[in-house]
Length: 104
Image (cartoon, rainbow, N blue to C red; front, side, top):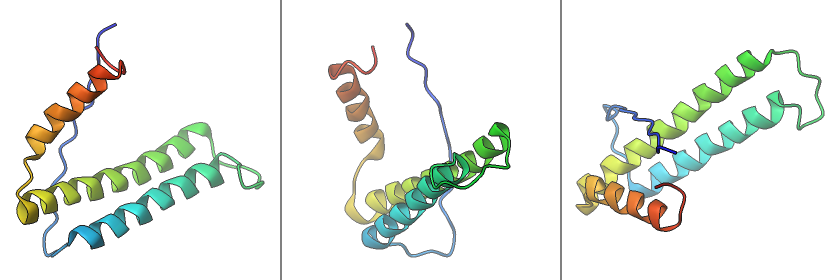
C-alpha cells in the first residue's frame, strides 16, 4: 500500500509576538476545543444530537485547522527563537514513522 500524504500550508500570523510557552498553551487550548466539539457533537456528553454527521464533521474540521494553525505557529517560533530546522525535523519524523512500521 502506497503511503499517502496530506500537505498543508498555513501562514505565519501577523502582529503576534508568541513565545514557546504562550504557543504551547494556545495549542492545548485549541486541542481542548477540538476534544469538546468531538465529545459534544458525537453525543459523548449525553446530549441529544441534532446535527447531521456532515455538519459535525465540518465543525470538527474547523477546530482541527485551528490546532494545525497553532502548531505551525509553534514551528515558526522554534525556527526564529531557537534556530531549529523544521524541514530537517520533518525528515527525521518521517524516518521515525518508517522505523516504527507506521508507513513504508
